[in-house]
Image (cartoon, rainbow, N blue to C red; front, side, top):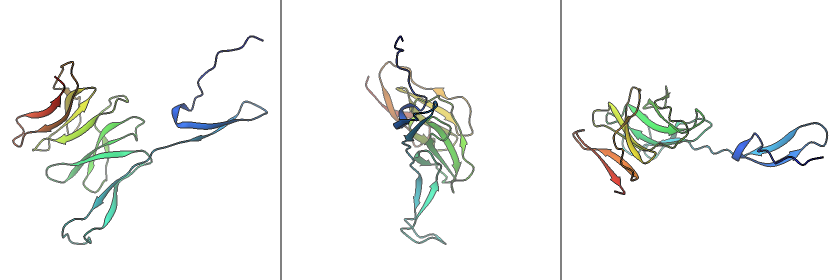
Length: 167
């Protein structure tokens, strides 16, 4: 028999500790998953909540990270892999009605910041700075320098976007 080249197993990088059945073509394996939820902590006086009380705010069976309140406090932008890849999501202030804003295809967006009027969200992606309408749409590329650019933020009046760069 001619030896065949090895083939990758279909469970990807999250699979480990495989065990093949001696009869048939079956495989059992363990799968490592990573689940992070976003919590809310009461830090001031508010009706119906005790100071220092933590409650789960944004949760799924996948990572939900990088939560950023809108300027009016009524919405939250966050990153999640609940669609299979990291994307930007927006939900109500209580974590309800999550909706995916981007379809970036697996490359990690980072450092979300709302515009002062709450209409746009700026973020870093693939070494450039982008902005997207908080209601959805196509992200607009704001920078295109070959240097890596990150950590975007809006000026107080929303006229400028500031960011760090390796230029």
